Amino acid sequence: MLLLPCPWESAVLVLSQPVEQDTLSWASQRSSSELTARQAELCVSTVGVWRPPTHPRRHLSMSQLSQSRALVIVNTHFHSSDGNMAFGTRRGAKREAEKLSNVLSRLNYTVKLVSNKTAKEIEDLYWQEHYHEHGEYFVSIISSHGEEGIIFGCDTEPVQLSHLFQILSSEKCPVLRKIPKIFFIQACRGKELDQGVVLECDSGEPEPECEPECLLDIPTIPPQTVVMFACSPGYVAFLNPSGSMFLQALLKVLEGEERHLDLIRLLTRINGKVAFHCQARGSYEGCKQMPCFITNLHQEVFPFSAPIMEEADGV
Image (cartoon, rainbow, N blue to C red; front, side, top):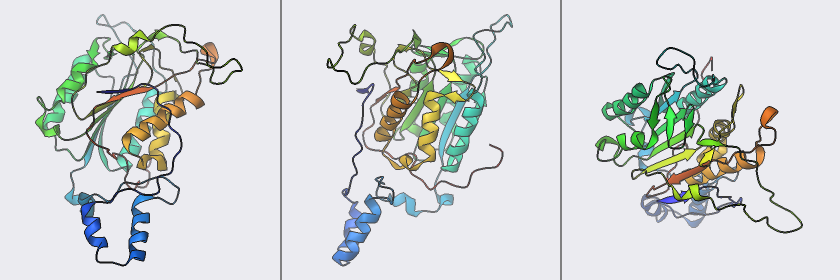
């Protein structure tokens, strides 16, 4: 398992990449000038973002391909078992989830958007994925209150994230055995506030105040799974009526040319956007947030590299 808590990525333009076997066979029958043009088309977009070589399945029409699925869960209102309001209302979360659902639909995902589900209902939603037909990828976005290792249902009951991941493991869900499963978790992982760090100073690099012991507690995830968290272990994740730092950064990436990047580079871009370009205001003025992700994928994947369709009305 590879832990990538806060990797920074330099902007490097990839000018060439190995092409697939069927492309090499094609090239052997054509002139070198045509080959150069073909390589350029495969490897470099007009805006300088590398695009993956055409996958053989993409020669099929959309009607011949099973659409990838996305499950979006957002909890905004919380009530305890006695019916009393609990936690705080998560203003801005529903609208944000709707925007993400819309852009995923435009990227040819079949999207299921649900809101204010209990802990039991959330688990049931993942069990139901066993009975659906899946495409190349499965994506899930969860937006709720949380603590380290858990998110809360709208009934304030906890849901173990590791349990959700295992529901879709190869042993329990053979239909998803070879399909990359990608989770985005917008929830607090503790109560600490991230005050940020000084990146440049005359005295050199500042020494850390303490060892990050929480990094030793790495969540366990099944094979072919990626989990990206809105914040580092032990810290809060910010949300305001305009949305969250984390999911707004994800939305911006999915709507732009960076969506063509391989998934790990795409997640690293999100890290950078949140770390360098976002900070809290109001009562938490100046506080920062640092997303992180864990992965045990076996290969590069490009889950969002698809022509984006016209935006649906009303979202």
